[in-house]
Image (tube, rainbow, N blue to C red; front, side, top):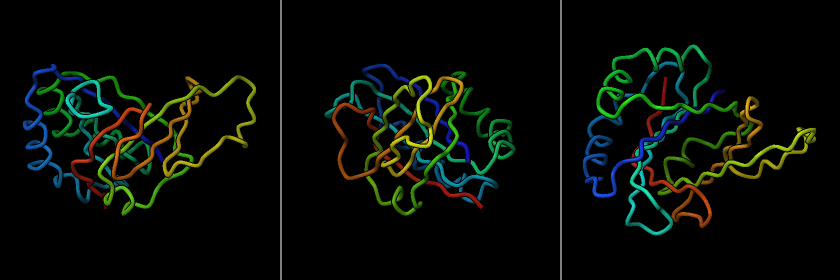
Length: 166
C-alpha cells in the first residue's frame, strides 16, 4: 500500500469555508475509486489551537502504484491543479494501517515525520501509531494518529470527509 499526501498552504486571510464547501461538494466523488483504500480530506485553520497555517492537505492510501497513477491522470486531479497549483507530492510505503472506521470516526489527524538513522534495525522500528509508513528514499518514518483533539508538537488537521474506494 502507498500513502500519498500533498499540501496547499493558503494565505492567512483565506476564507477556509471555501475549502470546507469544496470538501462537502466533492468528497463523495472519490467513493468507489478503484484501488483507493481511503482518502482523508484534511484541512487546518490558522486560528485554531496548535495550527500555524491555513492548509488543504488531503491524504490517500492506495492499494498499488497503478491506482495512484490512475488518480493523478484523472480529471479530478487536473481540476485540483488548475484551482490550487502544481503540488509537491510525498509518498510513503505503508507499514501499518488503521481500520477505515477509525479514520471516519476521528475529528483530527495528527502527523509526525522522523528520520530513520543510518544502519537502524528496521525490524525494530516503533510502529505504535495506527498508520505508519516509511519513505526509504529519504529514510523517514511517518506516524499518523487520529482522535478527537489535535496533538501538541505535531502537524494537525481536521478531517472533513473520508472517501473509500472500491
